[in-house]
Image 1 (cartoon, rainbow, N blue to C red):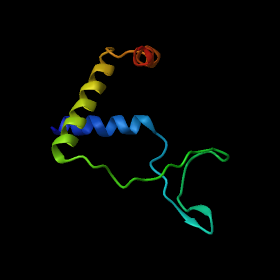
Image 2: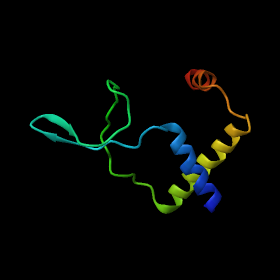
Image 3: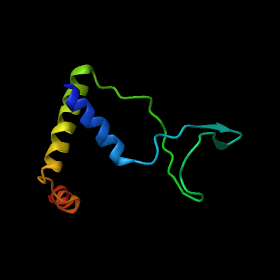
Image 4: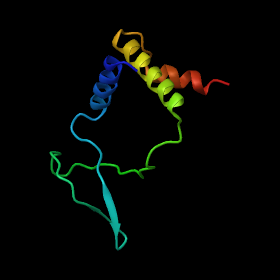
Length: 94
């Protein structure tokens, strides 16, 4: 992956959640304990998900995945994307 592609992926990920990065929590006495600073407004509700500590992709699979993400992002930036509803309709067809 070239430097430009890596930069594009980083920018794309920032666009998905512009106001915060991941949140880490631990379980103590059956409660989630979060001790992270945030700039989110008071009362904001967030969803926490289990961290799977990575994936089982090898280097070649990870490179192929990242190249596909870069190509998809570039297509979207060029106006070549499709509405999500149209994609879902295609997937639901027998």
